[in-house]
Length: 460
Image (tube, rainbow, N blue to C red; front, side, top):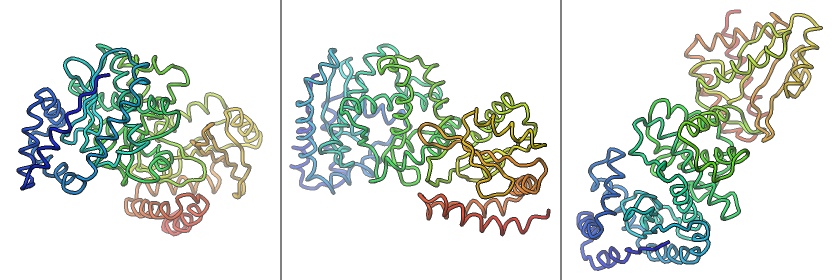
């Protein structure tokens, strides 16, 4: 590991600059970076990939304010980075025996850490301006950033000629699958080296907890972004966010790698081919796009995943329980364009008491937990919950064509066909979920009051 430190080249110019206007500051930055043509080309190429061609605009909007507001932190960030790199050098070289470069420089916001090539060798570019901007210049944040980027270097070396960069992808959707896997690998590598489940990313104190609870929403959104070929910035850029939380893609990716680790070593994961990566990423995102951690209330935008998940589970139930002849997808996840708690509600209608008893016992065999009537007469309630305490499905077993059966189908169909009430109901749920984030009982109680008002308008 060879450290190339060119920070002082900019520092000297900037501190000797009398008129620190944006134009003058950009001019000396451009002079500084032009002394290193390969590094400058890396910066330009990175923005070119993102269809950004006027780098002065980026400098003026995002970089210049960092110099103005936080210049007193730059030396601290630089000195800590170099110190941590030197302290970690032996550990890193025990893991990676091939030559690579670590470059400390003032960049243009291409990343606090960014992996590319330098002199035809793998290289990590540490942008001091972004490290300062993100307040990652001390202790765990900086150490995790370093090991995260070293994880990329290891990944690049292990893959060899199969290492991929954004410019190699013809389809943005394929790149979105790749980057989730790539960033997840790097973050998981860092966690294993640091021996703790840590993330230096995130812009909120409750970032990790929020990501855990909102994982279904994040995964469903990620699938939508991939299907629509949208940019990755909302998930991996600190200048963008989802519901006020930035860089959530790192969390999703790490959960993906943790799942893969159940059957593969990290080295085996690093060498997966692109088809395997795409399939594993999609399967992971699909499986995590529905379900909710027990005790929490999260309302997610509608996704086609819910319809597909219902169809898959319906097939599983009907294949294993011949007594099930009447089965419906109910609740908000069955209504297109309606936000919902991402738990799939299924209603099964039994035709006689013998069928009812057989269905109850066979649902238990399919790992459903039985709760009896659970407060509603002649309705038998089940939950399917994973080992991670994520509830995926609710089943409501009721007499076929009973009042319960008819009422729930009519309510579902009314919301499907009535845009005003559908939007009204969605707004109510969003407000209630924010008030009762960790109190499911309160959410259900308040929501039921509004359901009654809507039901009153339905012509039965």
